[in-house]
Each structure stands twice: as structure tokens, then as C-alpha cells.
Length: 334
Image (cartoon, rainbow, N blue to C red; front, side, top):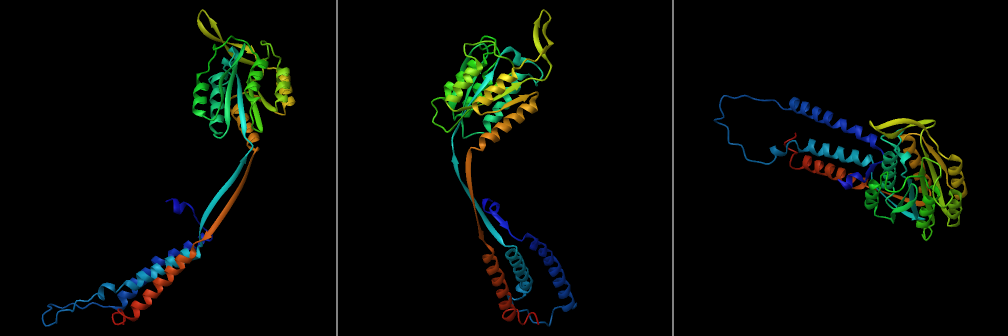
């Protein structure tokens, strides 16, 4: 099966001529009926027993060989070619750390099922699409820590990503600390491209490092930061604990977009705003394309003509038909 997958035809329209074969066979059958009659006799007594011969069994070999000749000739005219391709990839090497906000506001339900779960699922899809990169995970809220260091073992990373939840650390939004922790994971990397994807839905209100200070540190270590503001415009439903259980109340979405834009600008990255699941997925796809531009791929293609064996087969079948017609079948066909 693998062999046929690698075969292409330069002129596939020649296969339409295969429709001539049933026409030719039908004409042959009609001609045989016209040339040979039938004689009914009441008894076979008085007739000598027929001499056993292989010739009658080969009577229709000519139409078989002629059909095979035509098939082989049509395949040869369609010009089968083996298509081989390979590529040399020169990768600059990309190390990526995702800095993920897990503060209480990430439970808002303007995303489905909420910002936290939507962000996790879409980020995991992004990770699965980059099997050759080392990727790490930093989570932050009122403080920050490394959930997973840079690794090529993405199955472990995905499991650790699934494990993150609200309440792992004190509540708050320490954007500067989250970015600084991510940069710290990348500063000793020897790769030519180092990236942080910073996702948050709020404004910095905790931590000992200001976001802009963290951005300046990132710039010093040649770390590019893509910032993503998560949340709809205006108001969003936030879960609130009440005596009646969890109730959702509308609250103003407060994303410090100017600071996120400045972080991206300082480090040579880009700022994005995600207002729903599809927008967030699209943002990760854009980042994926931007960073894939760092891979230099040279592709080579080689096609080998394969029509000659079929042309030889057509000639062989034609020769066999000629030999049979002029030797064994000469008397039988006259």
C-alpha cells in the first residue's frame, strides 16, 4: 500500500481509454457468434472421437492478451511516477514558558465553562501542536511558582496543566511576579528563541516586582513576551458564595491593557485581547504561526518515471498475441 501512495500519474486522463476494453470485448463476442455456427445432430455415433488438444482451450487467448496490451499501454501513457520528498530542517530552537493566571477572577463565566478551564484546554492544544519545543508552565495569583520546568516530555506537562486550579496559591494578581518567574526559567537557556506567553484577566495588585520591571528584565535576557488579556468587554458573570450557594453576579471586567501592551512592546512581542473561547484559540494559533517562522525548512522533491515497465509489458503481451495467432491458433482461427 505504501508503494501505491507514493505513485502519481502525470497524465491521468488517459485512464478514460480503459472504457474501450469492455467495448472491444463485446465486439469480439459478437464477432465470434457471427463467424462460428452450431450444428445439432441426434447422435455422435459414426464420428471419430475428438483428439485431445490444448488449442481449443486457448481459443480466446488473443482477446485476453489484446486487453492486457491495451491496459499496460494506457498505464504507460498516463506516465506513472514515484514521488519522493524529504526535507532538511534547521531549527533555531524555541523554549516557551506559559505564565498562567489562576486568580479567582479566572472563574468568570464569560468563557465556557469559565476562563480558567477554557484557557487550560486551549493552551493544551497549543502544546500538542508543538512537539519539538521545550515548554514550561508558571502559575501565578497572589504569588507565583513553577508548575513545570522546561521539558520536551509534553505528556507530563499536559498532566500538570490539567492539575492546576483556583486556590492553589493565595488570591490576587501578581503579573510582575508571574513574568519574572517565567523569565528566570528561560534566562539560562541556550536556544536562539525564548518566549513567554503571559495570560491574565486583571491588573497587577500583588507581588514585589512591577510588571514593567519584569519586562525590562525579560528584554535583558532576550525573552520575547506575548501578552493575552482574557475577558469580555464591559461586565462578566462572576461566581459569588452566598448562603444559597454559588450565585453569579455581574462585575466589571478590569484588564490593565496599557501595561500588557507595554510589556509586549518592550520585549518585541505582541498583545492580544481574547473575549471568548474562539478568540483565545485564534490567538494561540497566531502565536504558533509567528514562532514557527523561526524554523527554516528546505524541501526536496524527486520524481522517477515508471512508464517503461508498463510499455515493456504492453510489447510483451502484443508479441505473445502475434506468436499464438501465427503458431498454435493459426488453424483454429481460420
